[in-house]
Length: 89
Image 1 (spheres, rainbow, N blue to C red):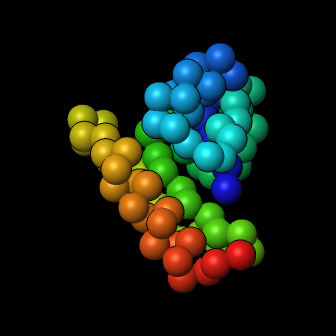
Image 2: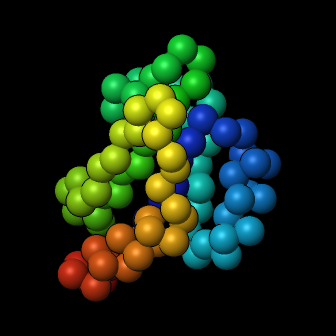
Image 3: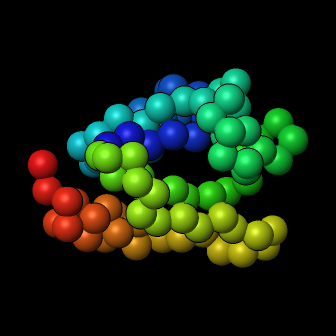
């Protein structure tokens, strides 16, 4: 499992440490992946969440509209747990 955002690597590390994540968060500072998912918003990414399983299948997608609240981290982590339980290693 991986996480990705337009944030710089140092910011990703701090966030991963804060949430005690056991998977890496990657930086897409050049927006290549963000553009390929169609969620570029100028020089940043539109806030969006994609959870893709080990087989490359998109299992969860949420693209927020302007003014819409964030998806709580706990909700995303629960989604990951459900997907992992359905598709164990």
